Length: 65
View: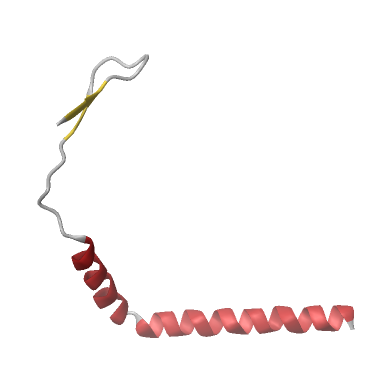
């Protein structure tokens, strides 16, 4: 347990550090697994971003040219 006293604050803030969480490797694997479920969403968002970027490039070319 960690105790911290703060100026102009009456009381203490207790933080309990528990070592029983998941590791970084487990969190990374879980993140990749959940991304797999959203591949269609990611593909649509990527395609939309590329279309908007191409539109911006086209508009800039027409304005300068």
